[in-house]
Image 1: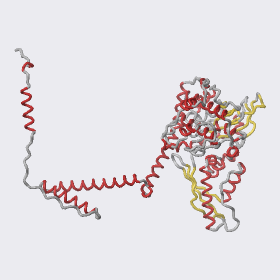
Image 2: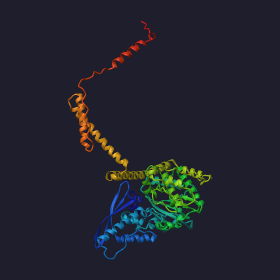
Image 3: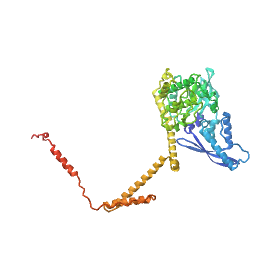
Amino acid sequence: MSIFENSATLKDKVDDTHPLKCTILNSRNTSGYTEYVIEVTRTGVQDYTWKIFKRYSDFVKLQNMLYKLSPKINLDLPPKKFIGNMDRKLVMQRQNALQNSLNTMVENLMLANSLLVRSFLDPESYSEYCKESLFQKVGMVLRGNREFELSKELPNIGWRLRKKSFLSKWKKDPKQELLLSWTECGPDLLLKQLDLITVLKSISSIIHPLVDIPVILPSPEGYTLSVHNIQVGSLRDLLYQTTPLQPFLKKYWDTSSHVYLPDQTMVSYIKQILYGLKFLHDNHIPYGHLHSGNVLVCDIENIKLTGIENSTLGLPSYYRSFLVQLGKKRIQSLNDIDVYGFGHILYEFTENEPLLRPFCEHFSQKTSLNLTKQMKTILAPPSSKLLMPTVNSIITNLKHARMIDEQKDPSFFKCKIPILVKEHYILIAEKCMSRIFEDQKKIALEKRHKKIYKIIHDPEKCSGVTQSKHFDFHSIKSNSSLDINNRSHSSSSNSTLTSTGSDIQTNSIAVNSSSLVSNPPPPPPPPPPSTTTIPIISSQSNNQRMALLSSISSFDTNKLKKIEK
């Protein structure tokens, strides 16, 4: 399988969910055209920086390709001019406008995760994915398979850049079309090939009505070939009223097509999602990939959770760029990530649009369902320091609110998981969270450095408490230095005790009067004490004498013992 070696090495270097930062450094004239020098940084535990050179026409080509996917995608490019393109003033205006366009690309979650934008900003890592067709490679893998036949390669219907989708036919029933996914393993992959096959077989053996179980096919190392049912599509497809086999941006960019679901349908979906998560959490199956695109709609009443193999394959979560901003107090495990994704689904249900920021504090509550309390707890900002609720606590609260009835819990299905697979599940969850914790720690340090920088360089904007603490610190420091000087002065003098005491007082007064010019002159020093020493009568000997007399008077002779000779 040498044809897969070049792509497989990228998984250790690039995490597609790491955000990008772009800055136009300057412009240069090359062959009569203006070229902009752009510095791109991929943020993570270790930042990677490179430079790209783009002309204005390159931005126009990108805008045209995005326009084909959705006419409402607008990068706000400056207008094109045929005369005076090399004018310095025009170049600076264009540079500022193009910088705003770059900010729009990297700050919007959907645009930042699109292959067109990533290949534009990082051509070295993603240019092959734009040109390469995997139809022949996947056909070679399926050549000996007797059940499935490759039919057609699909566009990027999902948000993952290293996941290709195909239509396949089941040979026993050629009329039934299935979705075949070719996935490259992610940067969180921990298990070796044999252990990975064992865990994937265990996942394929799970039986539960609320969990979509994939069919895992033999595939080369570093890749996974899985088969899923298409059926109606995902919950996101249902909310946007789109078909599942269209490109990702074309389906979900236009939020005006987003619709409300009936209250009864929403309550039914919420209940099934919670009980599906309860089954996964109770059996310690690592998930952490819940969002509306991973909720498969079987029919108008029944849904299933899909993508339960993603954490095992080392794939990062859809909301990973948000998770690292929430901090470790809010996100502590994969279960917390699932609950956080459930909060985003509630937001889409009630607000009729997706939440494109890490947290939210104000909700308009456009539906009759009262879910504001749950969303405030789940989508709270990191400054609130609230712990993420568990699935069981959410179910209990919704039962008290009479939104979920007391019907039989669908999570009564139990799956027998071997002990070795359970140990692998624990290692997988720890590996996925360890890298998130590292990114969270880095972001926390950056925030702390920015706060210190503001305190040092912008003291006027700091709070009064900070300024008072700063002043007290310097006053304490000056007082301590005075004490040290006074002690050294007193130890070096050879005069009597009374003379040194007066010297210390006069020295301290002199220092204070020289440092505080605006204060009135200090009062004259007190007269020195008389040189005659007053004898000090110690009462220690009297106390000892009284104690001895009292012990003699209270002595009992009856307690003495006779000694026999």
